[in-house]
Image 1 (cartoon, rainbow, N blue to C red):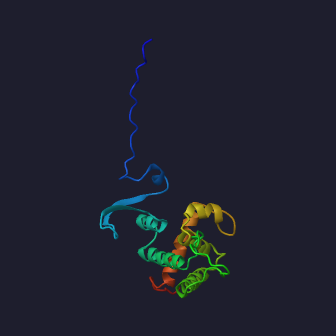
Image 2 (tube, rainbow, N blue to C red):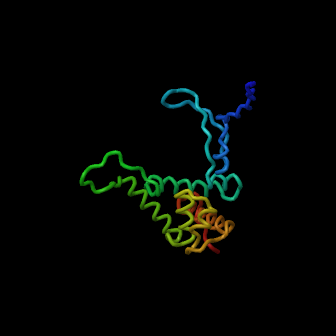
Image 3 (spheres, one colour):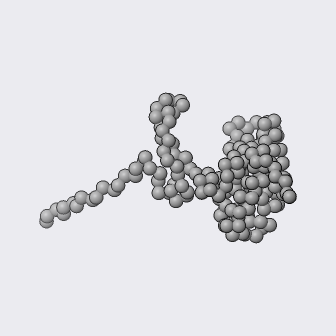
Length: 184
C-alpha cells in the first residue's frame, strides 16, 4: 500500500500587532499611533488612544472647545472623587476595618461634582443624569438613551445628544469657560 501524501496547508495569516485588532475596532474609533519613550525603560513604544464621546463631538463640531473643556473638568472631578462603579479590591485587609476612608481631595471632588449636577437640575433631571452617566461614567450617548433615558423612559439618540449638548453648555458657564449671558 502506498502512503498518502500530505498536502501543505496554507499558513494562517498572523495578526499585525502594529494595527488595532478587529475586536478593538468594532468598539469605536482609535486615534493615530503616537511614538513615545517608555518612562521606566526608555525604550520606544507606540500608543493608540481611543476617541471618547466628547472628543468625537468636538471633532464633528457638535460642541465647542469650551463645552469640551467643561466636560473634561467634570470627568476629572468624577475620577478624583472615585465615583466609578468599578472598584479595585484592597490588597491589604485589616480585621475590624471600617471600610475605605475618603481623602480630603476626594471629598472636595465629590462636593464639586454634586454641586455641578445640582446646578444642572439634580440627579433626576435629564441634564444631570446624562452628564453623570455619559461624561462621568463614560457610557455612550446611545447606551444612556436606551437604558437610562429621562425619568426611566428611553429617548431617541438625537434627543439624547441634544440634551448632552445643552448640559455641556451649562457646565461651560458653571466652570467659567463661557461668560454668563443675560436674557433681554
